[in-house]
Length: 104
Image 1 (cartoon, rainbow, N blue to C red):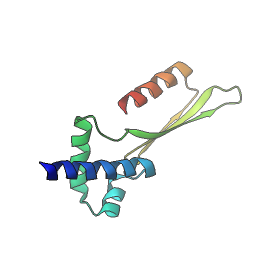
Image 2: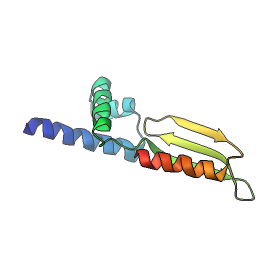
Image 3: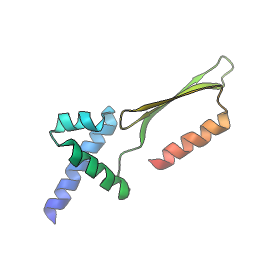
Image 4: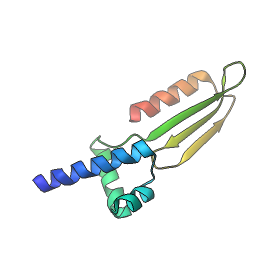
């Protein structure tokens, strides 16, 4: 049992590093020496247990001269980015941000 807890703690440390540095699972695999498949499995396990790293690491909003949102970039922990071009309704953007934060 202690070995399993040690392994889980090790994985949590690696996933915390992944979030801090915005690494993809492949980058984390190269850096840690842990096989990609093992990291994928642990990613799912930690997510199911509610201990997973945040789904996203950055939300950037570009505003037009009047201060209204006109472009949004969401960078996910897996390294992918989503770009939304506006104009974007501020209420919709606030709901999206709330959903992303709740997911973390």
